Image 1 (spheres, one colour):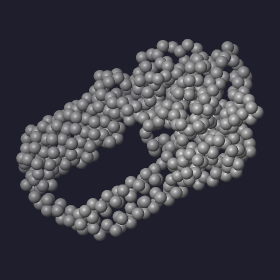
Image 2 (cartoon, one colour):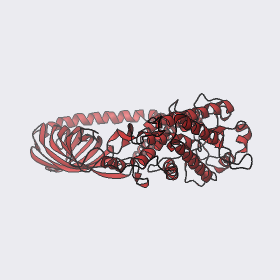
Image 3 (cartoon, rainbow, N blue to C red):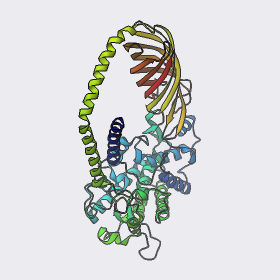
Length: 539
C-alpha cells in the first residue's frame, strides 16, 4: 500500500512537471547572443564589422570605471577591443534581445520578445502583417524604419559644419549587471545606437528568406528579401503560413550549426553590418548620410515579390532544407513539432490528468489530514514540558543555499536562550554566484545581532521565527563600488524548526530565510537579495 501511495504522488508530480514543460513561455531569438547556453553570434558579426571599418576616431584609453564596467557585464567582454567604443557597440548589438534584462530571466525575456509593436526591431512580422506580399512589404518597411530611427539616434551629435560626430558623448542605458541588477550604465551614444541598428540588419539574415542565388549571374546573391518570418503568431499557436507568413526558425539562429546556408548568411550579415557602420562613421553632412542610408537599403533590404508558400518561396533552397532536415519549427518532420496548438493541447491534457489524479486521491488525503491534526493536538499537550528546557548559552554552526540570486553562506552564531526568546550575535561569509557569466564572487561578509521567538511543540522540537540586523562588507570590487565598502544587512527567518536529537545538540532548519546584504547604498546600490534554505547544528 505504501508503494502505491508513493507511485500515485510521484505520478502526479510527473504530470504537473510535464504540463509545465509543455506550456512554458518561450523567448524568440535571431542570431544568438552570448550566454552560458548560446553562442556569441550577433557579437562576432559586429566585432568583425568593427575590425573592417575601424573607429570614427581613435578610442580613448579605458578609464578605471569603464574597465570595472567591462569586467562586470553579464557577458564576457574580454574577446572584444578594450575601449568604450567597442564595449558600447557590443552592448548595443545585444540590447534588442535583452533590453537590459538578465539572460536567464525567462519571464522578462518572453515579454521582451513577444511584445507587440516591437517585432520590427528583429525584422519580423507583427500580428497585423497579413498576406504574403502585403504582410512582407509592411514588415520590411517597419524594419527599415526601425533602422532609420536608430541610425539618426546614433548621429545625434552630428556637427552640421564639419560633418563629424562625437562618439565620446555618453548616454545612460539600462543593463543588467551581475550582483547589482538592472542599472543605468554610461555608454557611447553613437556606438550604442549603431549597435542596435546593426542588430536589426543582422536579424534580416535569419528572420527572412533571401534570394540565395544571383538573379542575373552577378554578385547579388543574398541581397533581395523574398519573405519575412513571423514569431508572434507562431508562439500563440494560430499561425497559418499562407496568411501569416513563414514561422520563425530557431535552427537558423545558430551561427555554429552545420546547416548549408549558414556560412553564406553569416558572411552576408557581416558585409551588410560593415556597410551600415561605414555609412555611420564616414564624415558628411546630413544629406550625404541619408543618401548613404538609402543606398544601403537599396543594396541589402529590397523586397522581391512573388515568393510564398504556394511556390515554396520561389523554391528557396533554405526552405527545401528545412522541410527535409527534421529541424524545422514549422513542419511535421521538425525537431520542435510540439509548438502551437499541439503543444498547448498536450499541456492542457497533462494538467487535466494531474487534476484527475488529485480528485482521485482526495479521500486518502482527508484521512491523512485528520491523522495529522490528531497528532498535533497530542504533541501540544506534551510541548508545555519543554518550555523550561534548553535554556542558557548556545552556539550554532550553519550553512545556507540561496534559491533566488544564487549564493551560499556559512558561518556561526552565539546566543543566550530563555523560555520563549533567544538573543545573540552572528557572522557569516556569503559568496555570490552569477549564472549568466558562470562566475563566482566573494560576495560579502555579514555580521550583527539576532533575536528569535521560540515555541515548543513537543519536548525535543521547537519552532522559531527571527530577525537579524547588522553590517555587510563587500569582499570584491564591482562596477561603481570597491571591496571593503560597508553597508547594512538584514535577515528575516519566517519559520524554522529546532530538533534536539540529544539533550544539548539540535538540528536547525530554516526553510524560509530571507537575507538582504546591502554593502553599498550610494551611487549604484548593491543589494543581493537571497531566499535561502539554511541548515545548522546547535549545541
